[in-house]
Image (cartoon, rainbow, N blue to C red; front, side, top):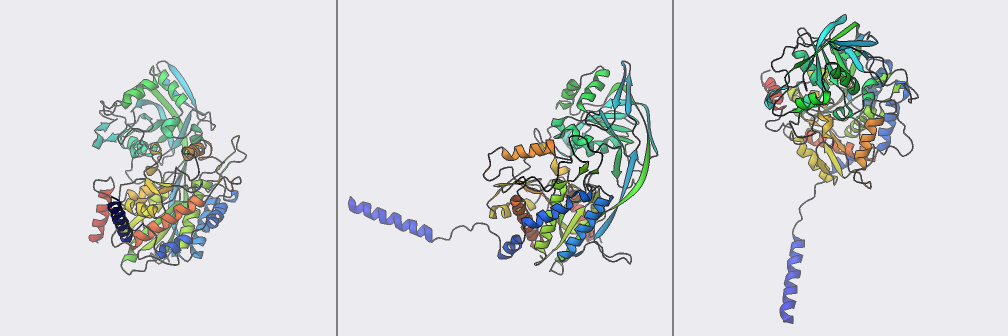
Length: 572
């Protein structure tokens, strides 16, 4: 028996040794070149850029204003110092430039202090005076000298969605031409409960209302449906609207409006209806869209409008690729340089400067750090570093860039967009907006695995973040995108800590003067921003060195745009 046991032990030991001798599956890792590039990303560099871009000197970086012009010039100077060249090609006798001019149009409405809503039960005066207690936010939209609505009928249109692929139409059988539509925020659970799609975004709702001929549109704000409190909207409620020049035949509303939840309840009560009941009916999946229903009320608004062209610019830097053919294709890194500017302070704020330190001086600072890290060892494809204007005004700079790219859209391999970076420390995980939409998702997974991190989709799907940052405008012309951020699982922190911090920021600092830098000691930890930036850098280098272009996955909403962009190249 002992002999048999000894033989069995020797056999087991030999088998174990044989297994140890077999080559182990290689863990993913960075190449030496990637390691060297990643090591050049530094927290102190991000902090230094951030400190300047968020300074009071820049007065909140409102598009076209002095402070934002300072930011634009600083960004171009830093790209040049990093060894890049101007990214806007020479044209018409003009040399290559760091600046792509964006012809923003500023519409300023002389909003009356009150807007009247009247019906058979009486009248209601909605306050438009700027404060946290205001009832109605009003801004012009069309390029007209005056917005005049005399008792324009209010029509409730549920979510204001026309989605034939879901069999949903809130305008079914209705004529809303010349009327003011009242719209719920968010969208039905097309992609799952609590997931916001493009249909749930305010800009889609305004665009769709204009396509149906409405004169105005009012979106009902609630904190759950917006994911931020009413004060976020009132902070920038100054009766102005910024837009790109209106094209001939382009449908636009005369007035865009938001109404607070409390005021909306009073409006529906004046119509003899209950907002909660109408909301439940609008959500009914059996009805697939409520169908427009007049409220029996009329809204009157008389608002002169002043129009002015406000020149602004996207900043574009180029790191030329090393491959003679592939250098004509581009991987983009992007961030928006604008914020909300300044206005009279509202207590408890001590000043009225909306510094936008996290949103989005942090993104600009990190893209600058990535540019300097990439410059010593260019990839096969070219890299473009783009800082967009007027993101806060509706992604206008990115839209202009997408419509007037420095190279055809079919040659834009991908865009890696940074908007509010991770300032809370290192994480075990990484959230990717649009995970699984394109082949870039696998590249992100590979690089994250080399860092020892897992990848998941949007940690806050109710925010609709994929559709509210600049990469969306590039996706609309077919360019695959990378939008990632560490978290919400932070090393050494309780499980729920990251989500709590995100919620606290949205409630207290998002679009408020309190979004400032430098912070109180220990409040910001840029080690996570560095780790994310290293991933973004390496992902971009791998995409730039890959033999083929990234692709949208079959059936994705942006696949047709990519196909059209590639066909346009072959027809040249």
